[in-house]
Amino acid sequence: MHTLALVTPLVLVAYLVVTEWVPMFPFNDLQSQTVKERLAMAAINYPIFIAIAVAVALNAGTVALVLSVLTMIGHVTSWWLPYFGFSFAAQREAYRREYARTWKILPTEGRDVVIDVQHMVVGVLCLIMLVSVTFTTLA
View 1: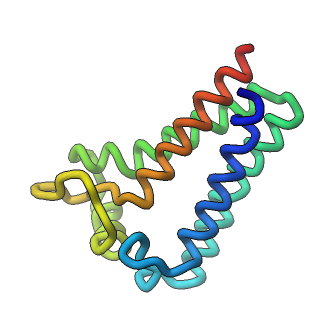
View 2 (view 1 turned 180 degrees about the horizontal axis):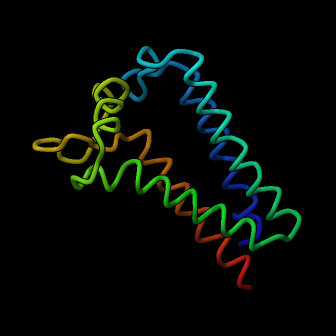
View 3 (view 1 turned 90 degrees about the vertical axis):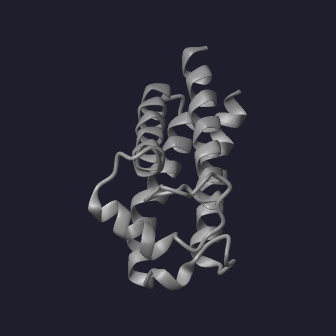
């Protein structure tokens, strides 16, 4: 479980690097964001996942767990709460601009924000990371 807790955040960084910088439309839609916007998101997201991996490697489980929980909360508030109708105008506008044309497998009718496949993968990886970090920390 320790290895999974260590590797998953690094896989997340690699996944984000590929999906945020390599055009793969309709899996992602890089035309909707400027390089400056993507760099800003990278500066926020990548260090968090790297910090989780470092914390696991240093046996600082509490730090890794807190960061993993915050990451999962961020994912849920960015995608799942808006999908179920709890969103702000800025979220809806960003969704329309950046993700409206990407692949989705969930029903879209009547929804202002629908999580796309690209971000569903992020959610699954975040969940794997959270579970593995939790087990590693509590073991």
